[in-house]
Image (tube, rainbow, N blue to C red; front, side, top):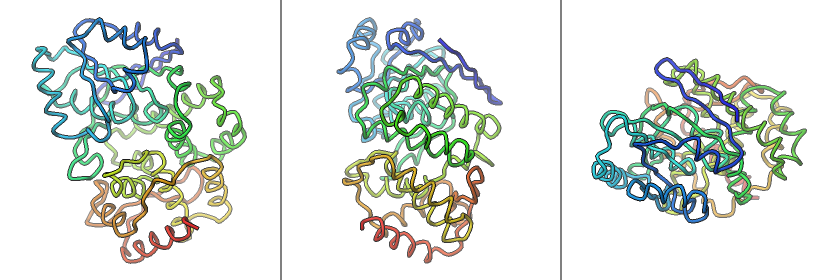
Length: 357
């Protein structure tokens, strides 16, 4: 077992690394807890079923977490916590992917002005992104993560055994964030992923543990210095303004977050090149790295008008202008305030036409 502490200005989080799911659950067990869990995770793991069986009256099951990350589901969660008389010393244990950790974090942040929170992320995406950094949110008005807050978990358990059971597309869903962290950090991190492509693709667990820890450290080092996203934490949104526009336009038939962001990163790289910020050479290296992994984009609807309209509603925008994170070079992301919305709209349409070829 390995422990790492992330310390912010307001609170610290203990990151605990385990291989075995059973060992992870033993580590988190305590009295005065409730479990918020993805229904599929519960159905597919006897170890978790046995853990939850000891706390039958204190389990809140979430079916289709991304679709149900809503105010109406939040009301059900508040009623659940009220029914078990949860006090401010109560701890919510969230077991699931990013949608579950987002939702449970939002509930913990808002119920009685703050409960204890322990996250057990079960997907690669949640391990390297959603569970690190304290962002919590629910979807509203068909816009992803429109309502939310910053709330630091007390504990996060990273368990590599969960990653063995992910299907390939869900695995790639999380790998997108690993690639993003590398691109915004350095050419050395990009080369590390490129040089280990075969092992990453085959899910070599020893290497994967190293990659998860490296990716967490990259994000942790950023958020420690800028918890409330006033400066360099904005760089973590590389690919996300485009990506969230794609995701929001597909809300009726939800798609994988990482796949939307993968396309969003390709758009950001292409736009960086068009704005003469990024060299053709580095753009081609980054684009080649993303394309080298076998993403299935076939179920993603790409409608330029819808994507652009959702981007105009992005919560990161300022002064009624779309804010993008673009790239000058590996390790040199920049905040770009768009002064030519018509040009951006044209770019989106043109990119989609080229992407579909």
